[in-house]
Image (cartoon, rainbow, N blue to C red; front, side, top):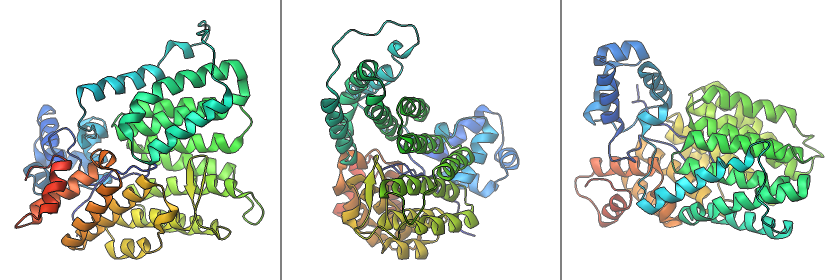
Length: 416
């Protein structure tokens, strides 16, 4: 049997994969520490979690840097800890980065959102200016400019709330999308619980308007955040429940309607793949393909959600990578058109491709693919746990490091 593999998710532009080592230690070291804190032997933990002793031993010795999400969820459950404590998703942050993340947190948890609290009497921005600012921030997100976002999102949230108080339902979209942006950013920074709270506020904000597709999109973001908490069943069910509620007429529905529906189906696909439900993965891929017949001009990007032939091929690649079927993953990847994808979406796709090349023992091609992913955005790349884990595997497998692999290892702080 193949070795279990990694935790990977389906957030816009974000991937969780082979064991992340963001805090300077690997999954194995964290696993050993939590196991000892629980006063369990490897054999006792294996029995409680329903996994093999061999897997635990290999992880703790560092012989394996990764495990399947289903195995990690079982181990976290047996140890009574959150999955994030085991995976170690928090990226390396400088002191200034920490301060910026706290500013985002404070903006989301501002007392100004509490009922009965007098609102700030600062003059709100005109709606067109706010909408342009939200769009510009999303372009930073898709371009991988995360540090800039940590400084702009707090002010954006404040302005969007002021606009909502002033303009009511007319400001629902920029307010919801500002909270959605905060949620997406926080998942990148390993703050899944706070991200889920931001996504919940995005859903609530969307209900102040009358745009049902906006509401559906925000629910998709909530499912994505819950997915990254490791609550795969909840994420899958919720995404598909909302997709059913807005199911379009495939022959006549406006294309943005198809985009939002398709994005929800692909979110459900990602959770099913992470949970290794092969039948559901096949069903979701088939369902997602139903909606792309009218996308003659390539993928669409509506409500900051992406859908079309390339997006379906990209998510199929991801699903087969999760299931450790590199041949099918690499075949699916041939259906991806680079021009259809935002920068970090393409970078995320390349991480899946690199992972499948590693599984197929195509180490040189995997290194080249990782270098291409890093070129998309170095700032984004260094926040990706699977990038760090994949580079670590290549370092481990290489008898002699190439200059390119050395540079990648420095970028993601992998010991050489």
